[in-house]
Length: 279
Ligand SMILES: NC(=O)c1ccc[n+]([C@@H]2O[C@H](COP(=O)([O-])OP(=O)(O)OC[C@H]3O[C@@H](n4cnc5c(N)ncnc54)[C@H](OP(=O)(O)O)[C@@H]3O)[C@@H](O)[C@H]2O)c1
Image (tube, rainbow, N blue to C red):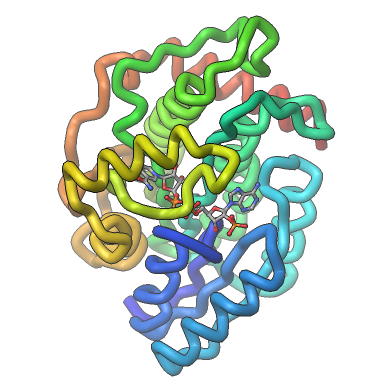
């Protein structure tokens, strides 16, 4: 698989940048999405010098905002005649409660509304090519999480860790629900492991400490952390696999809660209704 068009969100740092580099090294055309244009240009320069591939484009968008995701979707559709893979990777967690200018709690907005909105917007262009894929970077942080639908935007209180874990549970439920609906495009999710990245930045020093502690225990480098993202985006071995959750390039079980179809439907309706309201 070396002649595909692959969109990678959060490709300016961490696991996304590593995946973008390896995927470009295979000869694919890569659309890198990020919010910071300087980091975008730096990422493209680094990828091009490491791989010799200059079939690279940078798209700027703040993925915590539906309006920007809608604008981005049009830019992608105008730029490319086909999209073979969408790798939803951008994500994070805020130490403190932040409500976006559109009224959504920012961790939910970036980690779940972003995946939902970009994927559903690009479904037509994805399903136009045979064998297209959506890959959602989730996390084992979802284990033990349960969704309080009365507190989606932290109306009743905010815990950064709960917000993060719930958003990652939603990523998996969204993956399973969409996979059941789709027969043209495959949709899979993955856990990258604990990886020592910039996740949470300075604001999220607590999540950063947890990740650092975790990475010491489980010792996953960024190179290793990107393994399933690259595998699910490019390997022929998974061309007919859909609706699965992967770790280290192998399907694994997600939490019991993540298989609750009533909850999948509730997450879907919630995202659909926010997308409709804010578009
Ligand atoms: N690291 C871990 O241990 C771990 C474990 C499990 C799952 N994950 C998941 O892996 C994915 C990648 O995380 P990472 O560890 O590589 O983190 P990272 O190094 O912080 O990279 C996150 C990427 O997402 C981008 N991003 C964040 N918010 C954005 C926004 N509002 N608009 C546009 N781009 C945005 C960042 O852009 P900037 O460059 O502008 O910051 C960066 O490119 C996330 O989905 C995360 O939940 C990570």
